[in-house]
Image 1: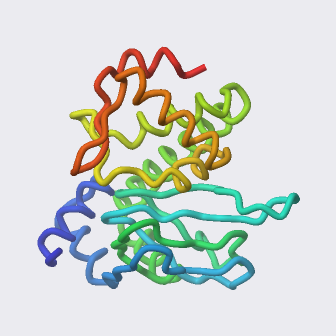
Image 2: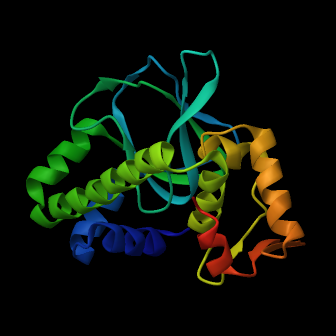
Length: 217
């Protein structure tokens, strides 16, 4: 991704002017991570922010039962890290598959927000969307069955053509849905048997979105 593409992405994410996007880009560093690379460890003192350009970053925490739990996940256009000031990370932050981010120090971001009103407005919209996503996940955890959460995650990961590429890793999908790998595998197999989804070389395709939506209970 070149400078022009990065600037255009920031302009879209923050809904700011090209000049403001260029200022953001100049203050940030492009960093690429591979699958399972760690961006931060639980207990570290954080002083950076990351904006996702491509891929997915996951925040994992150890539950009271000693099992790894997914606290949150951040995709393109989302922001995570230490803000509005330095803070101790409450979770490990790792890359799922390949992850491309723009990295900026917390203090630099704070200075940019003082200089650009529209950058601040854009940041508030980004955080607002992420807050709503967290509430949706909390509601799903309370109201949906484990299988229903797996199906909901499939819909969330699908693109406008109802395709998921590459094929989701069952263990990762189950972790995102806050359930076991066995439950996730059974849920996916049941959909394949009913002809609701289909695997192919490029990934997974949802053949009947309406049928899948009706199974989310």
